[in-house]
Length: 406
Ligand SMILES: [Zn+2]
Image (cartoon, rainbow, N blue to C red):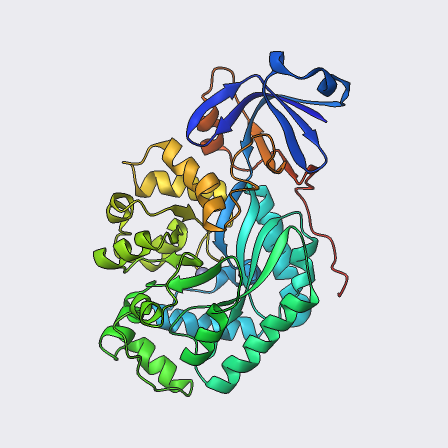
């Protein structure tokens, strides 16, 4: 098909005006001015989205779509009490409620501009729902448990899901939830799998910092209360990964709010990407995210929403606006890059997505563009996308189909 629009956003480059995109199957064949269209393309059916700006589909590099139903849990005052509240609220969802929660998370993600996600989900989640959804990305099946037997059981369950299901759009990856929430031996086994990327919550909270550095504080007490009082031997989660030889470019570091300058340098040396979730960061009132240091060391930065248990929205459009507010020193173009190519690199999908160029996947979104309005300004003010496409297929923005299992 042929797609026309008023403009097309390109990470790291000026927008293209009056673009024509020739899509064949799931791929972009030609992207350029209408005047440059190859003759063969002129045979295709045309969708004219004049009055709209096209953008690569946004990458939500960190979310927990299964937790969408937990949007109303009140903040109990500190991070560890929040973890306990989330676990309790989650345990009260029956299977039907869990399915509805995941479906609603997918629907809101699509409306908010994401076509690719790095989604954390439990080993007992209804994975088929995510695989059926018009989303690309990585399904990080969380391996966690501070008691070795529990950790080993969840590790087997996660590995079983990877064996049972396959999807060309959504790679299933057993991945540690975090270093502190996983038995050290199982952590090592999980990270030794020969897979593309592992998404791990790292240096997220002050409580995590104290747990590793001083073996004290609310997270230490919480973990001891769950049956494992063993002290970690290294002063931080990054240090533990490094000491075990597990700190590699296959790690996707999520949050990193409490990284030291030296650790940020270490991540940069290993070419590890970092995901910042501005809405969730604001919810917890963490210390200022170390943006300056991240930029100084050249770390690739991606953006995410996190879950509705700690963020007010699953919309990447909302995340772009939150970034504008949190870091007025960043240009809109830099923020747009983080939500497109930055996210694609973080999820090791930059060969397929992140920008609309020939040979990459036809994953894109459109938002209205007013007369004389700058294309990126139009994206930054959009409340929702008006059209989307994943792998060459138009997306139903009200997607909510029942799963095969429920
Ligand atoms: Zn998270």
